[in-house]
Length: 262
Image (cartoon, rainbow, N blue to C red; front, side, top):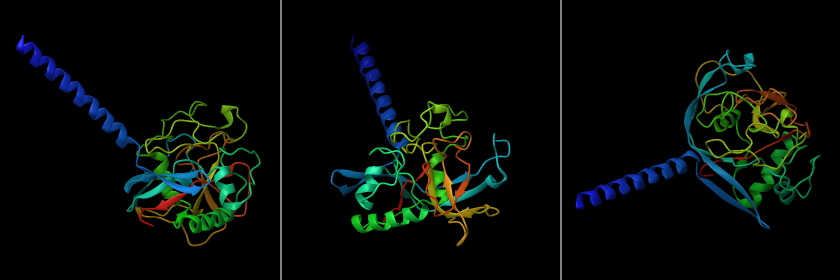
């Protein structure tokens, strides 16, 4: 009887330790989030993205591959924060006192904002919060989107209406941020809903390995990533697009980045 009780206790301990391991694994899968209070009940949630190395771009064998997606190794030497969600209309209104979006809704991503508009937003937000919010670099964006995956999308190789808001989802417009499952970093809507401005001028990738790339110092167009609700095949993690920094369209929005410790 005593032996049976000891075995039962051991079995219970094993189950408990296994449960703890599962919880720990779930906690480390999504990175630490920090909440920045904007006042009036509004907050911006930022997720800590660890420094690391990854393969940016795509293999030529990837479906819909483009020559400007040439695969190359990128190292990001510093951790940084990335917006858990795309910037919403209510967040934009609080800072900018206007709402340029075609489709209105507090929890919808703000749209019809140019790259230049995002710079003004960041300047005012930084004055309000005493931080250094900015747009992500293109490398930071793709690294954050992939979340240590190597597939066409952070959820695998196949895009379906269950994964993102795009043409086949039949919404026909933007929808509430966070409507789909997040990636392994805990970021939502990295594929679809709206294209997202990056800080970089659009250009061909440099040859060979790069460290903390920021793009060229000048150019005509700024990079946009992620695809929008009106996109069909342009939602892959590696897909690159561009737009004039003065363009304001109903399918382009943005999410914020913030360098750790600034």
